[in-house]
Image (cartoon, rainbow, N blue to C red):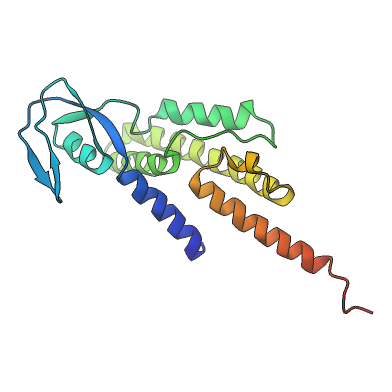
Length: 188
């Protein structure tokens, strides 16, 4: 993978880590300071909005739960898979749920870790991995197809940050290749 592409994926991941998410406090917690950030006080049953990385630590420690579908679930992955592979034509590309790829990586990693110690999770991990590969493959085919024909802004709108980068890279490669292939100057 090119360094530019890798940086885009890392940038999107860092952006996700620092995005604001909603949590519900499962217990009371006094104010605490984490990396120059103040968290709390938290009151049981109330909703709060905190950065994802803080929310994750509060959830792991049992002080909170995610309010919304912040972590990906098999159901949400399955819905995206169905929409991408069954509902759309080859030239259609719809927007992904917000922060889809960072959530997908975390979901697959969590399943992989659980499957290592719990055989009952292995099937879900296998299915989720297959769905993820299908989604990525399907979207990549659409992006490459669209990149060879159009640079219209309307096509870029539904793409994620990570997908825009590959779209632009493929488009530039195709354009350069086309101009070299069709170059007629200097030939006899």
